[in-house]
Length: 261
Image (cartoon, rainbow, N blue to C red; front, side, top):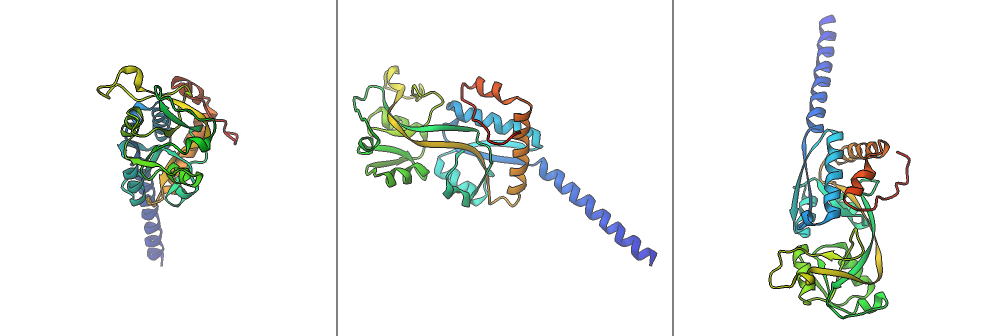
């Protein structure tokens, strides 16, 4: 009887050791987060990347970042090939495949942008919707614009292609947010265009608001735990007062968090 009881205790102990070992391995696993191609050139995306990296370090995870065309990012998240996105805006339809952190990294208004030398004008959103508009393939904004009445949408797979289409006036407008509302600089890799034409400027009123979060793929069986770990880590950054300096370094406005850290 004693021997049987001893065996049971031994088995329970071994199970606890194994469980603890598995939890430690899980906490130190490498998570892969994606963003659309060209993220390294976008100030806000670089901010999101740093916030994700620091939160991962606090939570005990290693992270890897990849850039794909947005349509591929979405498919990779849904299939579980990557573990989520560090630069995704919240939309209700995305809750079926993403577990969003409660606190946003960034909240901003959405505007249309045109080439700085494009003479088109508009005083309201309905006038803007009559122009040709470039959007990312499988982006939520495409459906939103269709519902608003847009008829002339052109889809592309990279931010660089979208910028180029607007600069060359193949399309008149593109929707985007920017940390600074003065405009968007497309980069210096575009050939045969004078430097002053690399700049896109906002036109008309805002067409909506976006909140950007870290999103965890629901295809990952541990997505609830990963979300919990990252939320604790991000709120630790808030409590320690480390976030203002990080946001200031990227010249991006820090959102107001509704809860008390």
